[in-house]
Each structure stands twice: as structure tokens, then as C-alpha cells.
Image 1 (cartoon, rainbow, N blue to C red):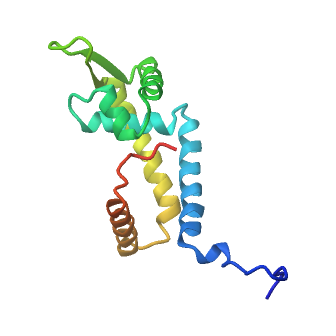
Image 2: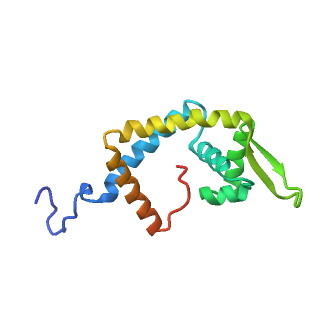
Image 3: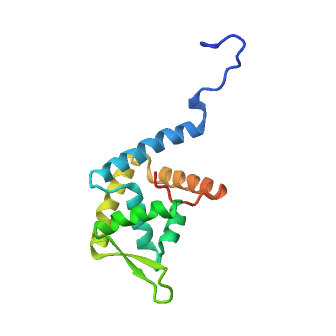
Length: 157
């Protein structure tokens, strides 16, 4: 009974909880990545948006907001920043002028591999201590938990 108050039941140490370890590592992985992106004047939300736009044809701002778990107003600000950088363009639908489609510009397509290398370097920094099988197992376990709990929004913070 180390430092236990009289009459107060002890609770397990933080280190006994899986969530503690997951949060500890996650905070460092994501914080390091965000700082590396910030050195290039890019936010994590901008990086995620670029990736999503690149992956899907005819993506609308509303679809992007849903995929990223953001409000329409918040995604609009992210898209404005990407447009200021000339990394995306917005085209109005011929069928409905209220609908915009997002696409990467040539500059955006050139920026994406450089930004992806930052993500690769960050992964290497934190996960290279694990061999390929361990990394695969970790990825599989995290994916299993995400699927089980229906966690599908792309993390942006």
C-alpha cells in the first residue's frame, strides 16, 4: 500500500491501462508529425484533405467534411488555405451550380509526395524499432479495433 489514503480504495496505476500506452505513443507520433508539417506551413487537416481529394473523383466539400469528421465551415477554411497555396481547384457542377467538385492542381500533385515523405519519416522514426511482422500485427490490431467500434473518420488532430 504505497501512499494510499486511509479508507480510499486504490485504483490501478495508469500504466496498467492499454489506453494510457496508446495515448502516450499516439500523442508523440501525431505531435511530431504536426510539427514537421508546420515547418512547411501545412496543417494536418490540409495534409489529410489533400490525400482525400487525391483518392476520390468528384469529391465535394460536404463529402470531404463528412470523411474528416469536420463541420462544413471548418472544411471551408481548410479548402480556402489549400486554394491560396494553389494546391486545389474547385469546379462547379454542370448539373447543379450549388455543387462544387474538388481536385488537385499540378502544384498540389507535386506537393503531395513531399508531404508523404514527412509521414514516412515520422513512421520510420517511431515504428522502425518494430520489425515488419510486428508493424503488420500492430496495424492489424488497430484496424480491427477501429472496425469493431465503427471508427472511420480520418483523424485530423
